[in-house]
Length: 111
Image 1 (spheres, rainbow, N blue to C red):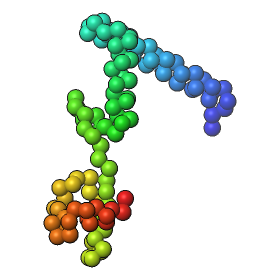
Image 2: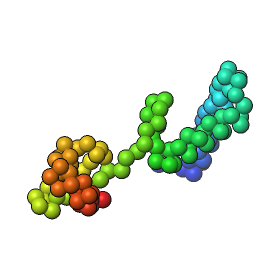
Image 3: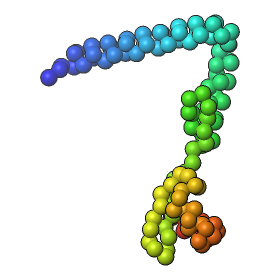
């Protein structure tokens, strides 16, 4: 069992490691900024754009962004069958829409 002095020493070592990692990150960031001729304001603008984009329901996918689709759950009241999908082109869902109409099937959404 560690005593209080050991715990404090471990916390101090952890803090020093975190500070070192932060310093290394800042150093690397400054090198990249110089390499690409970007200012701190440029970097902040880029990051804020990414945060806003993701906050508005987009997901980073490689170098491109993709709109995140909400998963929908449909329950056919005639058969009791349930379909969970993020995609409007689900085979069963398309069959239901052909048989009952899109508006009717959309009324079957549970969540």
